[in-house]
Image 1 (cartoon, rainbow, N blue to C red):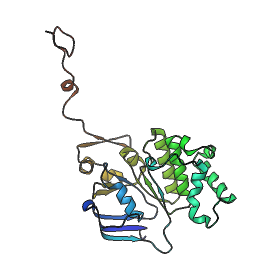
Image 2 (image 1 turned 135 degrees about the vertical axis):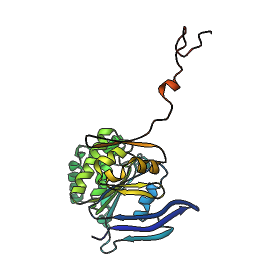
Image 3 (image 1 turned 45 degrees about the vertical axis):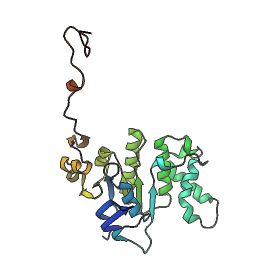
Image 4 (image 1 turned 120 degrees about the horizontal axis):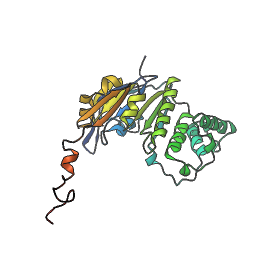
Length: 272
């Protein structure tokens, strides 16, 4: 099956400084891929290249043109202006802007479609609430609904679990898994390696170049993680779960906390 999007030997520079180098990447129909790497690795830049918000400095971008690929984007929550006076339902309906044509007000069918989708995501009761008054997890599901209402073929999310609690993050990944099982292609960036390992069938490790890509068991290894994050990493597998963490520093608790001095209080000079 032909890929929806393909990047071949793509470089991107900003102000003369290299940001991404020799990127070779395929996004196939039905794929669920998580893009991981440290801050400054170029993850958001790569998403913008895929979304055609940026153009490669060199290399080739292939994307289906006929019929045009329907792509929806969910940005990071921290990039949103929460002072804009809008309800959750109105945010979701904004995803139909291109389908609304010249008519500036949402049709009854559009409102019903938004409400049905919000009910599916467990936020139907929040329809009339101001978006600013919702929790981080609720806001993220509202923006997910806004993306889904346009029925995209490719859903792109930038750090969808940033700023949300563990239960909300787990819920968001479960919802994305169900969407993927229904046939939607999903690409996301995340700092949550453990969540990505548990839910995403394909992991792409990036640090200005693609270090490795493949299934979690093949990619989430100590050598690959250490090269990606440029730090000593440890990978622990237990009961079917994968945990990734930076290795502790060589100093120990005993080396950090002064040892008790005989005849004095711990950590204090007994002669004082």
